Image (cartoon, rainbow, N blue to C red):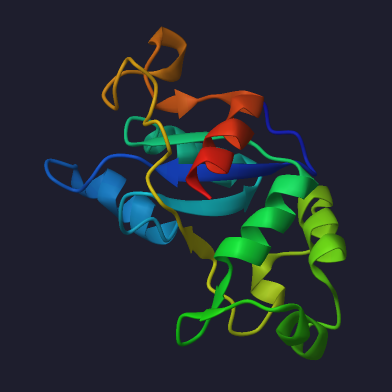
Length: 161
């Protein structure tokens, strides 16, 4: 996967913690992927791509668009105290709305760190209809669920919202 500046990558943890090497566990902790079915949004930079490649056997990842980011923020965004992220909160704390924030995130002009009190990961449901038929131990290219999936990432996240 090439590092193209300005694109946003969603990383979803699929597998649990049992039997994970310490280096991989540390990389997942740095990315705030502490449990299964958690999604984070990362900028497509060289260092982030390196961390993603380290955890590719336990996660799936791919590019996302502004519409999906907007839906993620509206339905799964949480603030401190596990409260739902609302338009009023965004307007008061960051002086923005869901649409402009999601567009700025995808273009690389903003970060989730810019909004005070916002959790940088999203807790998701397991996907409706399950993962792919190959299971959670095989790569996406071989019919499984792990590794790079490109634009297909949007479909999986839609099933989990």
